[in-house]
Image 1 (cartoon, protein in one colour):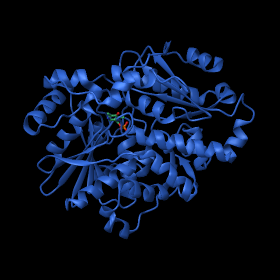
Image 2 (cartoon, rainbow, N blue to C red):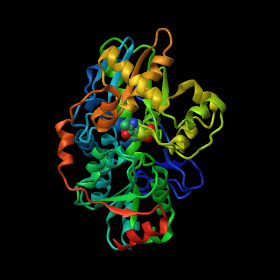
Image 3 (tube, rainbow, N blue to C red):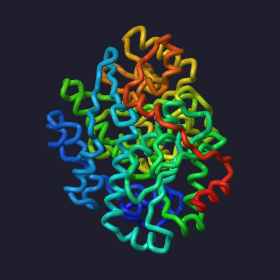
Image 4 (spheres, rainbow, N blue to C red):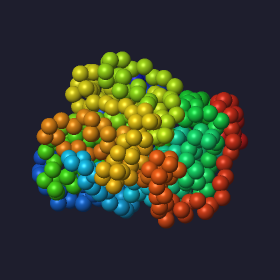
Length: 444
Ligand SMILES: *Cc1c(COP(=O)(O)O)cnc(C)c1O
């Protein structure tokens, strides 16, 4: 399968090139040339299939032309060593807990999948690697990732110890939770954490500049592991097919509305690809915190990126969502068509606090600040006869101090998270100017 750029000014790329380059030459995002629909029979029996079986079928549609069956199956099964349950929270409202992966983040799936796919191409010595790796110092692939918390931990852990790949995690100093910070600053090995004196958008800008820098690219093979990378964002579609199956198992899959707390819009974008492949979901809701750029686009038809504002749902503090370009492209820029499939919601910090308290006292379910936006968007937006599933994108323990303060609780930190907190923090401190970052990379 070939991939084109959302800006339409870059050459068509193979999957291998799209995964290694991340961003196209014209700064656009790669899109698959075709989106293969899944046959009707697949959906008729989907409730009898496991998460892993469903995911393999979906992965075949995306990557089956470029990766042999055996390898693809291994990649999928190695990525999904856990289940992804759906639980009832309130009347007509179900939660899809996306935090059962190794770092308790939904991004674990895309991160691990991408690491294994890259490894596959490195081992195979594909054409892009042969023609671009040779003249450099070594054949190593360098993954640059900007994070406001969850991406860094998921990517660092997904790539940890994978031969031939070095990961640089850039994060805004003092703006990620202590537990998240531990998840990428204590690993060592092929993972380097870089602490930037700035906000998330500064980190993302540094990464983008690095990809555009000729000298850097001459010296090192660089790739991204943000949701701009096709191998990171597409596998997230597995979740939505599985959620549909688990709701169908309960006989509740009619008029399904899925609600996704969104920041860079990679997760919801993968769900929209799912819909295009035939997933029978009636519509989607993108739930935002106070960063309401997409919400405003839906209301006005105009997209005006702005600086992100800091909120208690910080993994969604994005002022210029990178995957907007993909959604826009998927719907050929048709505002009305986008509004037919997606509606929006936006909640300020104080509203998020109230939502978390309301849900806890009425249902006993502990929401994290991100999931809270999803839950409320369903409460506010579900119509007569519709059934709602919202993604709970983070384990509440990841935001323990915030959650405990709001709920007057003392939630338990899962053993898997506690392990990370025992390690020694190691990071490189840096300003937000590109020259220092570039000099650092070149000196490595
Ligand atoms: C990454 C993340 C999001 C936003 O996902 P996007 O794909 O960037 O829209 C929401 N909640 C949590 C907890 C996250 O880590």
